[in-house]
Image (cartoon, rainbow, N blue to C red; front, side, top):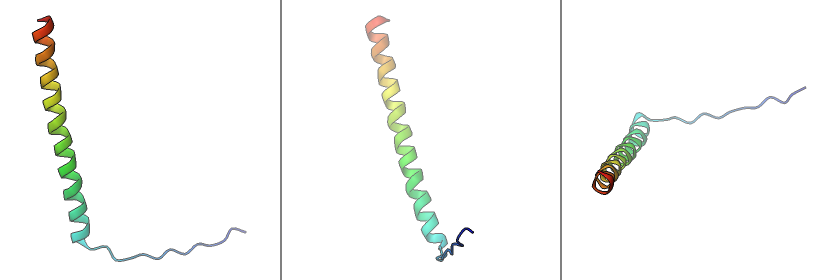
Length: 51
């Protein structure tokens, strides 16, 4: 038969979760900002060259 596995659960505090989510949100908003700036610059360049 299959062996039974045991798992040890450690206590996760709300501060740990909050810090991780804040870091993720900061990275996401930074990525989004730079993506929008890049797209805007590309659109202006395309208009300047072919517009």
